Length: 462
Image 1 (cartoon, one colour):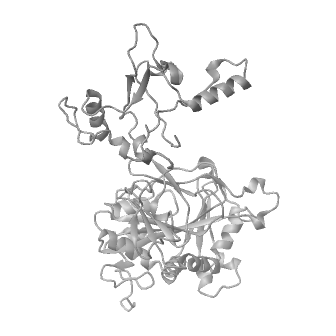
Image 2 (cartoon, rainbow, N blue to C red):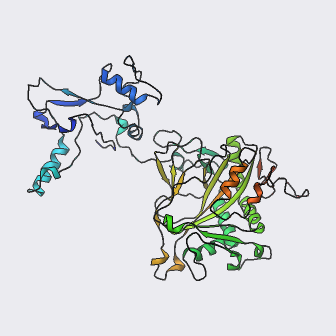
Image 3 (tube, one colour):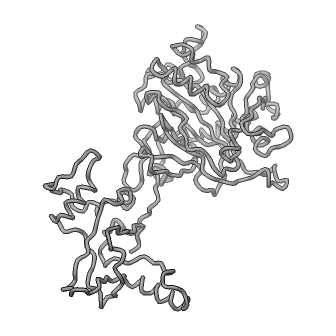
């Protein structure tokens, strides 16, 4: 049948049953009959919880439950379902057990014999068919690819701006991770507005030079240096010229990619980025997360650009962890390359499933404590094989804002996370409570451009 489901029997001797064809087959397969020992055992195995212990008196209330589930859910319970071989007639002693492999197997076998007359039969491989009607309708004409429901049909079902939703599987509606995997609707035009800010401050032009390794802009693996990117533009003013950013080529020799981080190095740059986020409409995203999880306040304590042109291997990692479920890395795109494969891997909470997603304009992915994710392999441009086409090189730039309710339960851990492998010019913000800046409160009294906090002048407007 047209289904992604492939059943692989692993009982002793089952794979030695030969093909008898429609005429000579003396056995066929069926699902366990209700009430049989096989049915009770596998109904228990398929539906049990980890702590359950099998009781021979177990009575199933959900017989052959796998027939009601999507193939993806069934595959996740491999080894916990069964079918039976039943005789079609009386079978004589020493008579070989045979089943009908089906017409597709027959056709493939005859084609193999005709095209490979001298080949050993052991070289032939083809799946064995199942009887008509053996697969339920919900196993047919479906995909075995994990997909996120919230981004399946954005044209007809757009995300509501300012709402944070758990990412759910398209095939069954269950949450990928109710604890740390969320998607956030941003204001229409947000991505374009923050991209315009990033172009005006020279960050995007700095990326074009770094990622194509132009003269004076080539960094070694894990090297970082500081720049005044506004000097690369014609739009600077006196305040812009004070801004310094650091750029770091992150562990390129280990992870085989050219990921460059760019983030604020001095206070002028940090304040400019926070204001730029606020002017573009990011307050709505911060509010969405705060209200979704019932926080009292949120501080955006770190913000970083991430740019790259190629990736052979990247680390599956979590940026934030052990902060009592009060912290999020909110990631959104600024520049993407059209027509490419998904750019980001997100791991499900069970740590068995990884789904690839595209970065989408005016949509953010929010990953909380132990939210594992990874840059997927891609190859837009490799400076070592450029052939002098640097000016036209495609690049990808995304942005991540680290936002948290910072209190006595997690301030030490957040300082540890922030003051990690990367440069940490603002680590002193974690020295005492209350925080110097708070960018959202449940009362609505603080914003990115007009924060509250202990370190601000008393005359600061809120």
